[in-house]
Every structure is written in C-alpha cells, then in structure tokens.
Length: 198
Image (cartoon, rainbow, N blue to C red; front, side, top):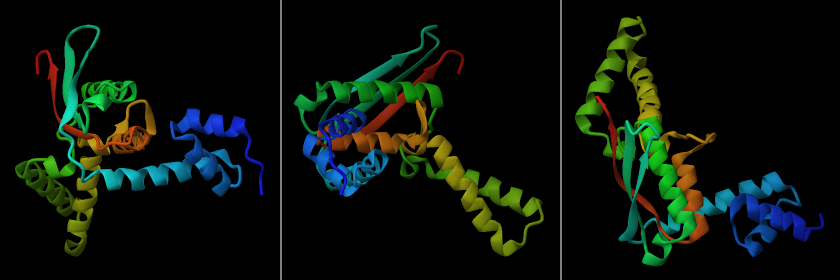
C-alpha cells in the first residue's frame, strides 16, 4: 500500500476543498493516486449533495454581474440553508461565478424542468420536421428529435451548460462541489439577464 504523505493530503485539499480526513481516506482508497482521489471525492460529493437536496434553503443572496462596457448584466438569486453560509466566501464566490455564467451563456432556464412547455413542444416539432425532411425512417424520427432536444437542454439550461471557466465541468458539477464543500443545500432559484438592445 502506498504511503500517504502530508504533502499529498495538502495538495488534494487545495485541489478539492474537501476536509483533511476525507482527503486522507480518498488517497488511501486511491492507493496514493491524486487524480483517482479527486474522482473519489467528487463521487462522494455527489452523494453528499443528493442527501442535502431535500433540506430547505431559505437564506441566500442576490448576486450580479455587470460587463465592463455596462451593456450586459445578469442578476441571480441563490439560496442556502443559513445566513452564516450566505456570508461565506466560497458561497459568495460561487454566486458571482453563476451571475457571470448567466451573462456569458444566456441560458433559457435553470433546469430542463423549468423550460416552458410551449418552447419544448416547438423545438421538438422543428427537430421532428428536420428529421423527416432528411428522409430518415419514420420509426427513428422521435429518437433523432430527442437527441437534438437533449443537445438543446445542454446548451440552454443553466445547470447543464458547460462552466465557462472549465468546459470539462457542467454548472451542476460546480454546484455539487460547492454543496459538498460548504455542507449545506444550495439552490439556484431564478435569474434575469439584460443586454442593451435586446
């Protein structure tokens, strides 16, 4: 079994923000492999976040982003469970990142469940017509349209979008990391994006 050094634990903590014992245990499980340990912590973070999702988040803050030319801005309400966490630096940084993400990527909704039904129906109708037009067999049209619909959700739903600072990570992955790090449920409630001339 690989020897787990204090330096390796420190490095993993800096990389993930996880607690010292969690880092030490993850490194043991990964037999000293730092990248494997990161994956183990991420998986455990997802499990922790899922447990916290049922807890009520009635505190929080409204964060804003205003582009340097003052022609683009975003405002987002993000909730947490306690006022203490609402003042936490990690939480505040996360809210600022999400406000920036909204300004940069112009999502339609927070999640696919929030996309208005008429938008989903219209997109699905367009994708079905495109598939039919391309001469594809009738029995696979819906599958093709569903695949395009998934792509639409990935591009237009905030939680499914690629995080603007790391295209290997979705906004939902970032949210899961924050929940795991601060130990409370965090909910992106609503947002608005403003652009001059739109």
